[in-house]
Image (cartoon, rainbow, N blue to C red; front, side, top):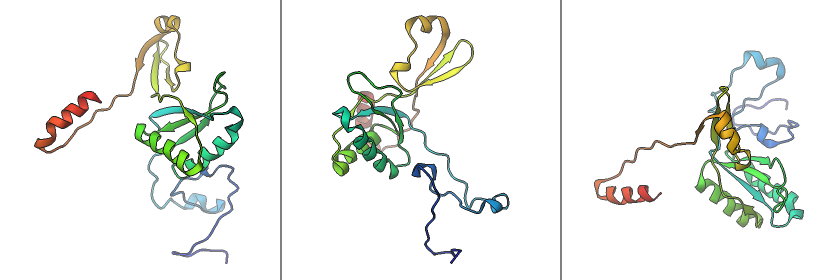
Length: 187
């Protein structure tokens, strides 16, 4: 019909190579009308992962199959970031670098990968991003231990190394304060 009214359902052929390029809430319009239209609601900023882990297939020949399963699962979870490992590891081969919001998020993703796609994969221990403040004023974010400066660089070129810290406030009934404190001390 050439147009959609409120409540109508339609489809769009956008020519996107990766569905993750479109975010939920994006406003679509003709290129000629872009300057005079405003988005319905401003989009909230995209979530940033705070925990990273690498994932490898148990057999190097299954990388493409694992990659497809991860991509399909990541379509339903916009907060997961997926990238290819910068270099293949000698013992594990090619892998993917995944970013998560936290440990629970990573565990749920791993379980869904196993349950929904039958993908038995190897996850590395998760790491958090560190910020390195160099003596020349530059700041670099390190997401993998392979990027860590060597001992000579640490003493000669690094000013500070900053790790993520969480400042939380716990609200609980009085009868649960002891159990909460005990749990927080062991966490």
